[in-house]
Picture 1 (cartoon, one colour):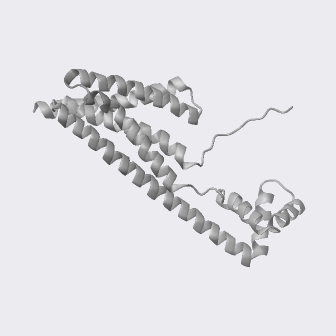
Picture 2 (cartoon, helix red, strand yellow):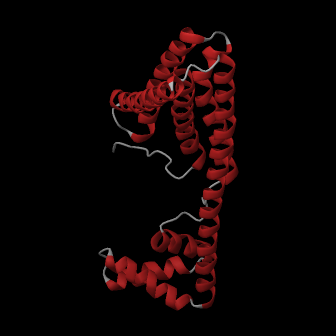
Picture 3 (cartoon, rainbow, N blue to C red):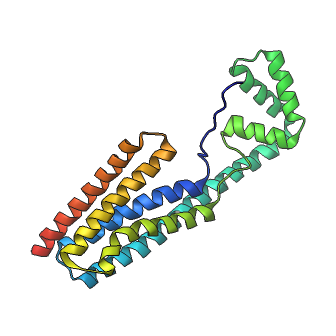
Length: 230
């Protein structure tokens, strides 16, 4: 029996938005919180900044994801409608286009003509075929902007909440160290999770995420310390 394999879903917006939402929330808020802590701000001020960063960032991410995916979806639907009208009003022209595509991929002219004629005999199959071959899209899957926006909002909020947790229970050095530890653990876990989607080594992905988060946190902490000291 031939070995079977499966592919990851690369077109769904929800999973992609969720994974990167957690990453963005974690990196941005751990940097914000440690920047405020580096400036020797009061615990209340750090908490306020962390909560504000969480809420503002989550809404910004959700809005950006919705608008971008909505525009992409509308563009796909417009192109599909153009293709649908062409199939309806100029079927022979579209058949020849499809035959030419098949020939360019190695089929002889007679086989390409026969296959294109079969595809064009069913309007829905013809639309799906032209969409895949000419536009590179699946007409049944043009994205779900609302799903992506909600997933992005929730994921960003979860990521941003992680470094904020210590400041809800303590303050000062203890809270700062708590944010560093939780931020590092969160970055490592998020990086390992990203490896599930990218297929890269989980240790390499986790290390990269940890390094990026660490650099962002260190830079903002230093800036906060210098400005606060001044």
